[in-house]
Length: 135
Image (cartoon, rainbow, N blue to C red; front, side, top):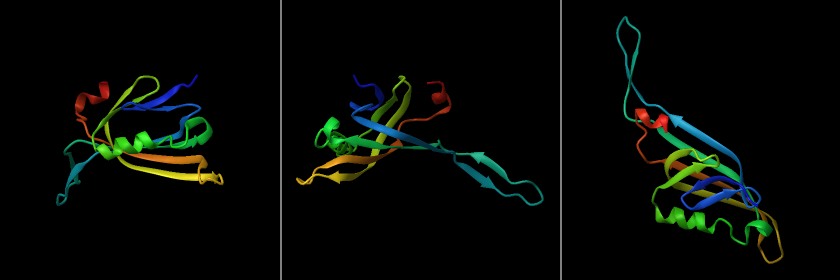
């Protein structure tokens, strides 16, 4: 039985099939910089923070099927936001799929890759207001 590592919409990253080995989360907080003469520079918060997540890992074609990332590419083509949950049930927000990168290795004679390395770049699109950290 596979354990769910994360869910993006209805696409599941699971152990033993579509497994990721890294999840990089980048949050940028924006400030307006006000320089003053003879005083320290002041910084004022503006807008909301920007959040990007990159999920990377690998899939084995024997366990994950001939084209295990086809659903993910289809979802990206719809260009809509999807909720992202990690395996323990924490909701991380609504994200769009900006990029899907795949690298096939150990190619069979029929051209099918045995191992597929992948990377999925996501950008958060929902509100990240003051209370979002409570969720």
